[in-house]
Image (tube, rainbow, N blue to C red):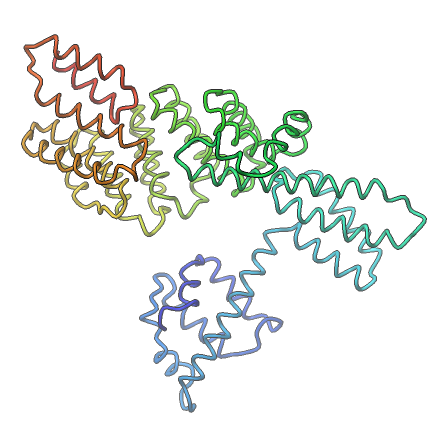
Length: 477
């Protein structure tokens, strides 16, 4: 079977989902073709390590269409039908995972068929469920609005009813859907930019009015519209990073309600809180290392990482570095061994090798660290820079100064060529490389030079590996 839409979809679903797909196919409502079942079973033989090259069109033809003519066309038609059924199955999964959406679809069907007692009962259930829903995101407001529209059309047939309140509620709902959607879009844009969002947000129509409305009604928003409140705090963290109150407000809110967040909403606040800490740490505010570690530990206890089967390399390595910087080596090793299988497949090998190098370095196993670093690819600048940083420190610890100088020189040339790409990190890495050059040349006997280097390092608190550099300078004393 050549690489196709089907093979991509098969690689994207879990073994558990594939088993459920089998149950879906065995229902006559969805599928009446025995050949579809045979193809499912044939693919299932290889599903643990699915390889399209093993389930070839020729193999499908020989296994399923023995003795039949025009096998090529039969195989293509079978694969097409199989793909369509897999798409239907994925749609069904989404409906099952969104109770509000499926209830609204059912309500519309009941109204169209004039099944009114059940319509009334389901309407009450939807109202009760919506009142308890914590995750009032764009989907929530959209389907709540759709529900209210269906209910209003049904009740509007009685011309004696006063429905003004219902129309006002629909209007408020529309406003909140606009607000949460606008905030999510803006926060997504800002999160992808290196520059602060203070000027960026002004190019988005309506944002100033939204902020003014939220701040006037902040207690109501926090109580009844928690996702809007979270998105507002995320925006304020970007617009006013010096006011740490917004960070602490959101952090407190998240951990007080952590069991109420759906995965997508929890992921949003996680990245915002952790990125805020990372930016603060990069600016030399070291107290945020503890804040970041607290976030990682609490989310790990909640099961955030175990549920995430596609952890990005920067997130995975960031968690490790945070733990190692605070000397929580056992926890970092536990995290590595527990969740390394959940790293996004595209980056898994390089992430595991770099993580192994970091742990080995922390354990003072410098040669093992170098061995792991030599296996890291440099497809992304992050891997190159972090690898070179650890490599330089390892060579220094081993006293291999000539090799260290060569690596420092290569890294300096690299960051010059990638200055625009690195943005604020350019200066941080440049400082590290310059301090390393100075450290190598230092004469232990010249105490004033050592003192001067320490003073300069104290002034440049954003320097990469600053704590390690301080430790090495102290050793010279």
